[in-house]
Image (cartoon, rainbow, N blue to C red; front, side, top):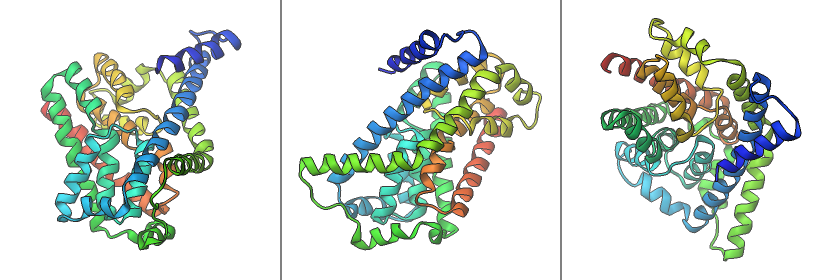
Length: 318
């Protein structure tokens, strides 16, 4: 399926535009075309399916599932739910918003939002195949710890006042999805997709353009120079490089493997991977529709600090 996007980019960039496939400009344009088509198609499909699923589950049921237990158990269950829902960061956002609307505590919803793109069965299977079960297990445990701890900290800070007002109105019962017919569910999902796309498309394109520039004009040697094993600031540098990119775990793990083969330490490369999957620019754009800037920056700061600590820990023990 995904090969279709590569072929489309080949057709447009190399056949129609006549660009040189070995040039940096040609590689950047190819990357931009392929990722733009892939992200918008996959995002539309996944958001549509998530909206269909949401239409079957009353918000009260979701609230009871995640908030009917103790707070710590709720965080663990939300992070565990993220592991079995292999979404990228953008497609996890609709579920995150739905959890907020359903009355799930704010910190618990963040535990899900962090774990879903960063730790899932696709990532674990690829890590197991490339690096062995020990690395896959360490990544699973540390990813869940990051998700749970970050969610607990956000909940402890009591930042509910930085959530958009309309979310609390929905939580009071004025915005719940009623029982629908099959046709109404499809119409509801289609409207939801149109609303999301209308708000975020310029910012997603901007984020992909930034990623295309990095892909075409920033060689791996540059990253190795600044994030190699001799640089004590390698882990935060890798995180900084990873944030502008947009990819899911399956897409970024082969890059991680290539970087490790060129000499990047495991902790540094996995910190890069976590940053790409858990802190993407399009995700922040979607979250800005329901969260105020202070909460978004708090989320970015907490997760960034946790990822950097995990990177240093991996470099010490592996």
